[in-house]
Image (cartoon, rainbow, N blue to C red; front, side, top):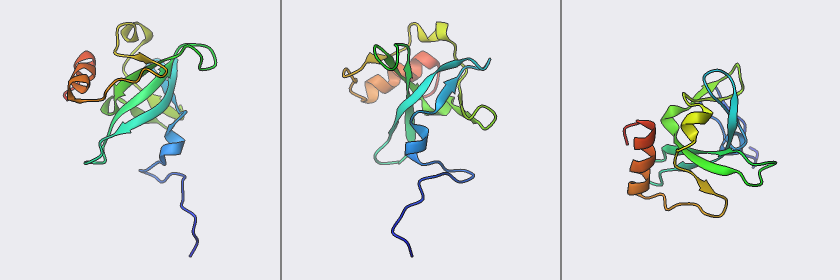
Length: 120
């Protein structure tokens, strides 16, 4: 028996360290950004948000957009996640700057989910 943990992926599962940095594309195939991290409900273990990094240059000046996890669809063809969004829709989307992370409470969750028209 080995002491190492498989941090790769299976047919249905992927390790968290492989999700971070994964590209996010719009429906037309244009790259919107990358998954910076994701937020998991402590009690249910369910991923609630993918926090997408968008804009800036080499990560400097980028903003972070929490997107409801259920909006993302993994595309093996693109090797990344696809969302039904475009850059125009992100203009007024809930976001924050580096080192200005919001309090991910129920009120904030409702605001994010409501903006995207997703049931919270």
